[in-house]
Amino acid sequence: MSEHPAIVVDDVSKQFRLYRERAGSIKEMITSRNFGRYDEFMALQNVSLEVPQGSVYGLVGHNGSGKSSLLRLVAGIQRPTTGRITTKGRISALLELGAGFHPDLSGRENIYLNASILGIRRKQCDLIIDDIIDFSGLHEFIDSPVRHYSSGMYVRLGFAVAVHVDPQILIVDEVIAVGDEEFQRRCFEHLHKLRGEGVTIMFVTHSLGLVRGMCDRAAWLEHGKMLLEGNAGDVVNAYLAEVNEAEAARLEEADARSVELAAQAREAVEGESAQDAERSALHQPAPASKRPISLGEVEFVNGAGEVVPVARTHDPLTIRIHYRCHEPLPDPLFSFSIENEASVYVANPGMIGTDRARVELTGEGFVDYHLDSLPLSEGLYRISVAIHSSQAPVCFDKITDARTLRIQPAERPVHGIVDLGGTWAPALTDLRASPRQPVIAAAASAPSSRPPSPPDDPVPDS
Image (tube, rainbow, N blue to C red; front, side):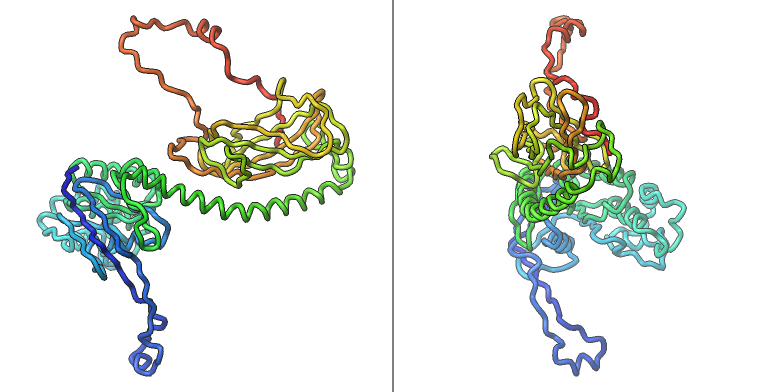
């Protein structure tokens, strides 16, 4: 990567006119009083950045924040209202699905058309057209009019042309996301190849993992203003923190309403007759009229002791289960299960041994399950709770899907469902210097940190 900038955006602003009415004819243009009235909209305001030559630069932000507008200005499709943009090298851009394609021309003819627009002569295009067709994978349809192409085929052909015309600066919008998984992998593989050849790449994406893993630097745009510019990881972390905070505020309001509705539904269930259905003592809760204890609200408590609607990977979290005793009850066993959005059974912690309350419960209260570091990856998880007797496998009460836990991503992402939390030991270069211990002996000498298994099916499936 060179220290010399390939792209310089110097105090750039872009203003658009949003017309209230547009004339449909010359007569309307003359007679309409409202014609020509418009509102001014600032898509970009005083944005400045530099993209080093041979680097990969990402733009992140909410929809409508000005990312695509900035790409169009850099590509030369539009001109800034104020400020200046300087680029060094031939620019190849893929900003919009099917941009530059003529619908009545075949795929082959559109390759030559796009290449000529980018300054590639026909003889030069003859040398690379086979590579373009091979990369697109459209051999069977290359001589058909592109009006019959699907959106994915448009992207394949457009991207293949953009990356094979020897660009020095490649500008790509979110259009790659339209392609299938196999084509996306091929695209990113080719982008890494171009990066190794010194091509400067600037793109917009909503995949923050891609920005973290591929970009050298990034900028965060919000309502046309640049809030942060710098190392890609730092920018992504700051953007995620803002998104997480806004999401928590939004969910907190919705959560209060859902808790109220759940309480109302719970009261309705409490009034049901014991003859409504035959229930198994092991797999279903006892009739409401015969329950010695009932489960209540499920809450999530963060490391600061605050009840929150969302959690974050690797942060401390306490799952709090409320209860109400209808009569004194000795040593009940609480448990809960966790399932992800795909209904994958993730975990089922249940009280055992010393985890038991060892007290006689009366009145109302709660029990906590504390995690020093939440090991789950980001996503939505359904929490079901249950309470059992300590002497026999009798389910006093159970609430399926009692609460939904939304887990937000952390600075260190989790690939998969669970972070195992293990550590790597240094690699040994000489096994003779550190002989390997017998597996059975090592396992016997090390105390096990794994808790004993909970009772069978403490929260049985409905």
